[in-house]
Amino acid sequence: MSTTPKAPTEFSSSVPPLVAPDIIQPEAIPTGTSAAQDVPSNNGPLPVVPERLPSDQVRISVVRAIAAWGFGAAFFNVTAGAIYAAFVRSLSTSDFLFGALASALPLTSFLQVMAARMVERSGRRKRLMVVCGLIGRSLWLVSALLPLLWTRFPHSFSKSGTFTLILICVATSGVFQAFTGPAFFSWMADLVPERVRPAFFARRMQVGTLTALLVSILAGLIADNFQKVSWITQHFQPLEIYCFILAIAAVCGVIDIAMFIGVKEPPSSSRLDENGAFLPAEEIVQPPLLASLREPLRDRGVRNFLLFVSLLMAGYGIQGAFLWLHALEYLHLSKTVTGIVVNGMPLLGIACGMPFWSSVIKRYGTRPVMRFCSVGIIFIPFGWLTAQPNECLNLAFVTFISGFVAGAIDLSNQNLVTGLAPHIPRSTLAALFSIAAGLSMGIASLLGGRLAEFLHGMHEHFLGLTLINYHVLFLCSLLLRIINAAVVAPRLREPDAASTLETVKEVIPELAQSFANLLARPIKVRGESEK
Image (cartoon, rainbow, N blue to C red):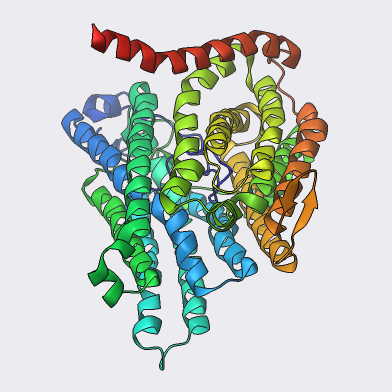
């Protein structure tokens, strides 16, 4: 499924997922006839209490959900990577239109709020996710194949008309996919037992990371080397090769969703009362949407957190999509290398950093980690500003660090949403978080595209560096990160957190030791193999 928790990274055009609302865990729900008999009832028959799913069905469903993400990771890796950038660039050289496509998914994130309310009221997570997911992924298949109409029938279809249809398909797909996230998280929270839930998401991350790396390399190799086969070059244009690769990725996306048809759906805890009995839909009272969102904004801590998230995601959005174009067109990296550097290395950084940051947050709290990492991400744009053509090793290290730090920020965001304002429903805070993150990233991507378009053709020399339009976007991202770290992050509050200075003094040596162990591991393995 596409909505597994993922930290925002430098290349990402996605939005941090909507955090699942507070729900009763499956282990806490009384089940079976004996439990129903313990429920006092003074009026009418005893309430009907749903039975828990058999353990073998839960186990099979969990395995299917993990395996499905292998296909989902392949879909997202290709449709937001170097192949997609080359695909779009073959249809339009406009930076603004490229930014508009990148903003389509983030700008639809506010619909997750409506989806969460639908899930809480109806409890039909599986139907909502499967139907909307299949439609959304199928539209990606349509958009991947649309350029074939122009290449094969140029007199009947124009390039601009084809691009417009693709933009409509991608935007409509984003609308449908926005409804899958809340349904997925609510569904998995009721399906996966709490004691194994961290292992479940960790295994999904492992499967997704491995798949993403393999797909990045495979798709890049195909795109870089197909011209060496004379039969292919005689019958197909480069754009058509990109179409075929994206179409295969879209099919993987459809398979990802289709595999959930066989996943069992337990009763929704949002439809159960305190005794574990079903509530009719008409008895579920939901406050007016705008009123429920307006109330938390009176809390200064919530406002500061939302401002932090907005600036953070704007910093990602204004440069994120254009890193692909910068790597391909200015740095002249191959599609294989670009996929590894811009996508694969951050994923490795996230995977390596999650256990470390999880331990740090448990010991010191969320606030010091957010402050520390908000300073750390300031240095990431410098790597892109100073990167020279055909240079990839230094950039790979920078993107690895960006993923390593982004994982900490993602964990911190989710923890802060949970404990920021205990008197405010978690689902409401999650909705505000989703709206702030999505809109700020989408708008920043649009503005970045407009600015890059305005500065198209720019070539300035400064301190021995050649600056082009994309470098200006990196500078804008740098400015947003500095403001966030220096002005907004210090205002974040968490009563029980340790001081930032104390945390930094303790964490820096641990961080250095972690990197030393990471670098020493291949040497140790090699030494053992030689013995």
